[in-house]
Amino acid sequence: MIIKPIRNDDDLQRTFKRLEKIFQAAEGTREADERDVLVILVEAYEAKRFDFGVVDPVEAIKFRMEQDGLTPRDLEAYIGHSGRVSEVLNHKRALSRRMIKRLHEGLRIPYESLLAESR
Image 1 (cartoon, rainbow, N blue to C red):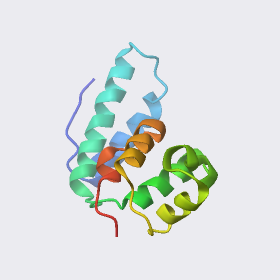
Image 2 (cartoon, one colour; image 1 turned 90 degrees about the vertical axis):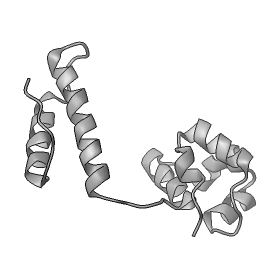
Image 3 (cartoon, rainbow, N blue to C red; image 1 turned 180 degrees about the vertical axis):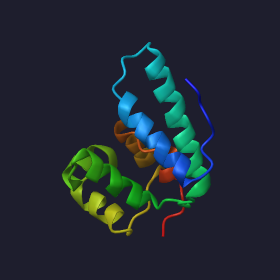
Image 4 (cartoon, rainbow, N blue to C red; image 1 turned 90 degrees about the horizontal axis):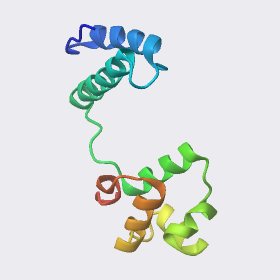
């Protein structure tokens, strides 16, 4: 296994092609170790190359909803009654510390995203 830094988009594409071949590698194998290292390299390159800036907390919640197939009703356990969920999703109510903690623990939304300044 020869690991090289990802310095440009061509390197990134080569890394993706290699990852496609080894992505399903069984844990504990050399290919799995290689996969894990390559994923870290890709994440580091993308973080440096593509600055996405600060994410709006509501957009982070909506993104998680889309990823997990959740509806506003599913958020009631983390935010409160349906009216409160609606207010949060429409930027009419700020997230409380309790909501942030519940959203982080229940939906695995990073604190950094939930604590960012809302638009």
